[in-house]
Length: 135
Image (cartoon, rainbow, N blue to C red; front, side, top):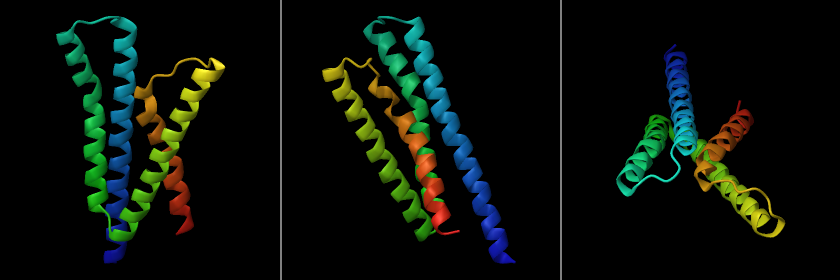
């Protein structure tokens, strides 16, 4: 019975983690898109405030991720860290590929600020695939 309760607590922690991290990334994308479409060339002070406001959801995302990993057992933590490494590497590869395509093929510019949202999407896919291996 205790194992079932432990699994239920873990599922609740996972749902909370998924909700909070997705919310943080959505807030970042909304702020980034909103601020860039409204404000073209802010001054130094306003620019610094916009950077702080826009990136604060990413700091929240990192805090939630760290807190979630600490709540897991060693095996689940290892799987989550593997998913993080794969998703970060994949996002960096996509960014590098796109940068080379911009340089040599004239592909449209994509801002590097969107690398973390790309990594989060890849992470969700990789995490689900790794979890299925051990179901």
